[in-house]
Length: 92
Ligand SMILES: [Cu+2]
Image (tube, rainbow, N blue to C red; front, side):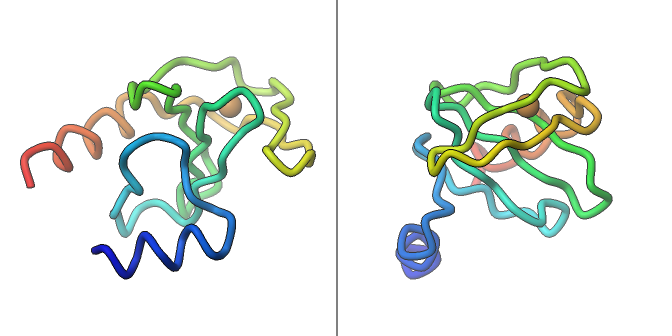
């Protein structure tokens, strides 16, 4: 797990929140400029995690800015899906 975090940090993909999510369902987690994180699922849909590590809603189509200045358009709004993954993490 620790090694995984180091790899994530080195690649610049680490979330600013305390947890790097460990889910086979999540393809990519991208840190945003405002301190939140967008998790991209394997099917291309996304879910937002705020800077406190809580799942939050975002309207599909919303344009987000990544920490390194790229623009991403919100696809879907998989709050419940992320909520389940986060809940599972806390029980580990
Ligand atoms: Cu978003």
